[in-house]
Amino acid sequence: MLTYLLRRLALALATTAAVVTITFALVHLAPGEPFVAGAEDRFVPPETVARLRERFGLDRPLGVQFARYAANLAHGDLGESFARHRPVAAVLAESLPNTLLLGATALVLSLLFGIGLGIAQATRAGTWADSALGALALACYSVPAFWLGLMLLLVFGEWLHWLPVSGMADVTLRVPMDGLRHALDVGRHLVLPALTLALVNGAAVARFHRAAMIEALGADFVRAARARGLGERRVVLRHALRSALAPAITLAGLSVPALLTGSVLVESVFGWPGMGRVAYEAIFARDYNVITAVAVVAGVLVAVGNLLADLGVAAADPRVRRA
Amino acid sequence: MRALRRGWLRFRAHRAAVAAGLLVAVLAIAAAFAPLVAPADPLAQPDPVALQNQPPSAAHLLGTDRFSRDVLSRIVYGARVSLGVGAAAALLAVTVGALVGLAAGLASPAVDQLLMRSVDVALALPRVFLILLVLALWENAPPWVVVLLIALTGWFQTSRVVRALVLRLRESEFVQAARALGSGRPGLVRRHLLPHLAPTIIVSATLDVGNIILLESGLSYLGLGIRPPAPSWGNMIQDGKDQLFSAPWVAAAPGLALLVTVVAFNLFGDGLQAAFDPRDRR
Picture 1 (cartoon, rainbow over the protein chains, first blue to last red):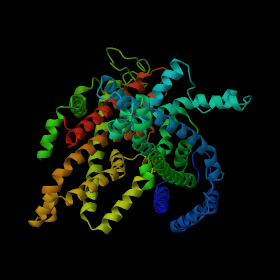
Picture 2: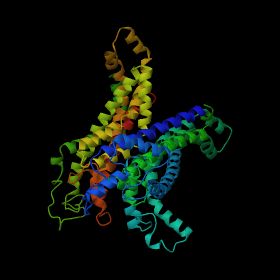
Picture 3: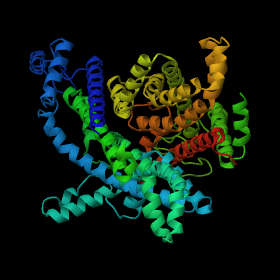
Picture 4: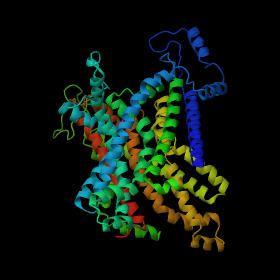
């Protein structure tokens, strides 16, 4: 177990270091500067640009800048945002919880959807119902998430008026709302983006889970359970499901970073104030420290996702725990 | 090559996959002969005021967008982008992946370990974030840069699979025999390894195309992939997003084209996989 944890930790550190280094190199080598004299419509005198560059250490050689950034990062200091004039940590503290809320909701929903669909298909394997559900899974697996989001928006937001079309809270109601009403309001805004991500992600889970369930349902221990006279429900949900969970859990864990950093598109469709939007704006503003901080978060999320996947598999399958 | 032929015979039994393969072929032909297939010029704006956002009609089967351009014609031309980027990036990615996998599988254990640990790290990189970053920082990147970026961040899984296969094949009796008979490494790879790797590589490439098409459409939707006015399905959806509620067909149609195309590639790939899989007999 200890060697396993150390290996995981080493991989996580290597990944984060690689992401940070690549990101740092890319943003500094790319054309464009965070501070430009006469930028856009306002006139910034060259002395001010020079002063800003000096203040953020951009006048130093690239190697020195990188060493300094890495040293600060090791101390947990992510630096200051050029564009927002605030610590990067504060910018992340604002947006990361929103992304985590969306991602976690989507992850839970996609597991429920994927596993449920997998069971429904496997118990009807070879029938028309299996084919129909398989077609549904294939469609969800093959659809561009951002387009699915737009279509859900069109149907449930505009045509049926069931759900709000954008944002995370109702702006006009913000002032007088108490805790519970606010939570309900956020929940209503959460439905469509979370559903979009869950359908796309859950379909991938379902494809693997169906195969695992079919294999499990044909296994000897399931026949033994049936022979003992257990009800079909119990056989499927307690015996077969448990041994078939590993691929679904692994896949869900591996999709954690994709759900969180890859949700840029879905966040932009629904105007969700998450990290994707912060990253997107930072890239165009050449806000180096924010961009690199997003890379750090992405690296950490990958590690967390992998760890969650392994722990989940170990929890579901005692054979793995012993290994 | 016998594995390929046996696979083909079994593939024919998967009717849905055969239909999907035909659909892929039809799409590719339509894209190649876009000027003959499309009813109108995809960039022409006959009357941006009177003819903008027209609903589907006999004159414009899928309606017009806000510049009065014919949506169907733009979809036909957009297929060139989706299929072109998808095929080029998938081929490149699979080639790199297969070469690295072969190298790792045949190299000394030290080199193998080095390559595969690097692949472990690379697989964990946030792919979409890095591609977005490069395309946003170097503005107006030409399409081949998009292809290159997608391919260079997309070969890791293939290299793992190929390496695992090579390791297994290397110990098999027929390879041992070929070696004992004095077969050199190039001959070994060409005559004995590649034929056994081909099915895996083909399946991997086919399934990649679908994913890459989705990725490219997302990049173009964000305005970072293929730039307007050249039509790509992703930037057409972006175009249609602003009048989603008043002219939904502008965004809906290219999304359906994406859905159908990606479904076709995935079904085709699944069929190939099942056909080549020796465990799947039917």
